[in-house]
Length: 447
Image 1 (tube, rainbow, N blue to C red):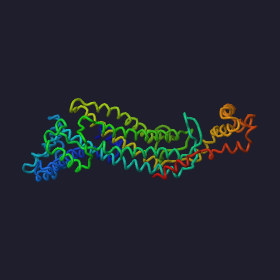
Image 2 (image 1 turned 90 degrees about the vertical axis):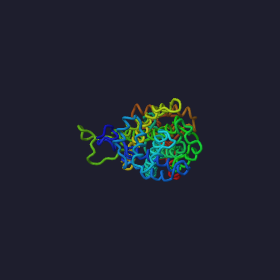
Image 3 (image 1 turned 120 degrees about the vertical axis):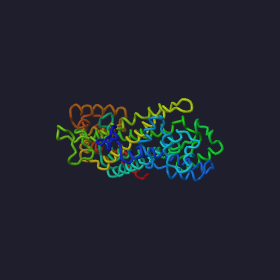
Image 4 (image 1 turned 180 degrees about the horizontal axis):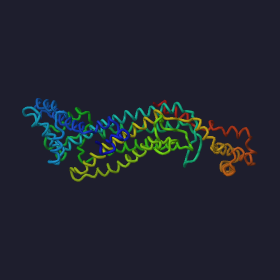
């Protein structure tokens, strides 16, 4: 029975994914601890610190399904310690003296830190896979709608015409940079930890660096120049990148919500018969998926300040800060996976209304092209003077609810400089989308 929305039977798939829950569930956490202990034994056997037979036995028995989780949990309550009960449980099932070589020279934080990094590494692979798929979906949509004209908006108002493909290409390009961040940051984030009680490896001074090398190679982790028991910037960087990803997802969700407004109606998140927008208003087709994503991503964006707070370690060990990480690392990964999965669904089956987009471009009867008129007129009478003239005509068009063309033709400064045919040509929206299509091509060609 779930006690948090992430593992609630009702909401779990809206706030996370099955694969990410598997990454952070108790069975996998226990297995990661055991994986580190087994890899440490193998590394120490290679370095001549412990017998190879002991390392072999530890590796064979370091399986979560062989241990009693309930008994370990009970002993954790008694010991107030997460790793000692695991060591004891593993020792108990190892043959002969092999159990005596478990955890040799390590401190518990070496195990918990490395296990968290292994979980984060797995989480990053899941996020990278889904983020790459979302980028590809957006690129395909951008190509399809390369020339689909729609209003560009600034300050919530119509500005100039753009294409829907251009909007999508911007999002795809941003996601492309997030993928680069995830890749580029790997050596700084996915570092193993084996440092001993205060980080000096005083327990194994002759073989410590060699053990580190074998251990990290075994686990597929990057080496660290120094121990990072109290240097948590790698974890903060990871959380920050996830928060940036979530900010992009939230922005996209908000845009769908806004463009699905009844008065705009240019986009709609996926709809199937049976999807209910309201328990009391049967007509409603609400953007419920995007609203959920917007809410989730707002929570994720609050995690970096908490992660930054957890950087403030005292002395050579500060377990209080580690307890914070055990909360915000899984939660951030789980929520990010949920938001990402939801947005993949939205954009795979996004409903686009090109005709409505064009209607909205024409809604202001030419005003959306006031800049085109101003610049053409400016070539003849000067830019600033032209701005004043077109401003006056535009305000009159607004207030009198007439077309910009009519308002312009009533201005002597315009009618004396531009013919009616020239004005008509300047008021063609498709001719004033600038480099929208070329920008789409640039993003598509890079991929």
